[in-house]
Image (cartoon, rainbow, N blue to C red):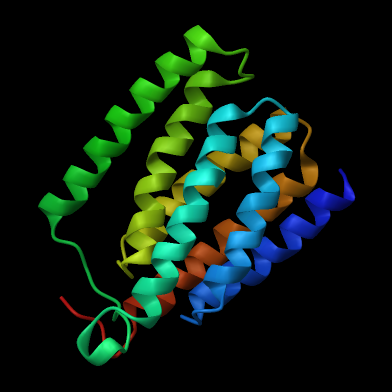
Length: 187
């Protein structure tokens, strides 16, 4: 564990807690966190996760815009549900992305866990996009992904980050409950 990992983990907890509360400050704080984690993951050869953090940086900006500028009268998005077809489409895109990235990482890098890391990356991108769009379905996907991330980070000896993702799991459960009960939930 490094001081950098501790700082990034602290920012991560703050960012996810603010997301659960639908506070748009989750996005700039999350931006700093993902930039720090891109370096941390590079150092431990989790290259798909490193790339994921870079993409997250762009999605942090997108989410910030969606939550503060999109929607009626520039008031930001409301929590909403995806239909079954859209959920299935998102999961298929996550699976295809996972396979393509996994093949690339397995064949062209010295990645520590190319296939698992790629799968987590592919589906995390789907969950992050859904989160930026305030889709309730982001939370159950995050719950599954965060549990798997805990195992990966324990395997890599990244105990603080594993604990962080354990906390993310609990926050995702809270987020799922909170967003489902939002009085402004749009079908």
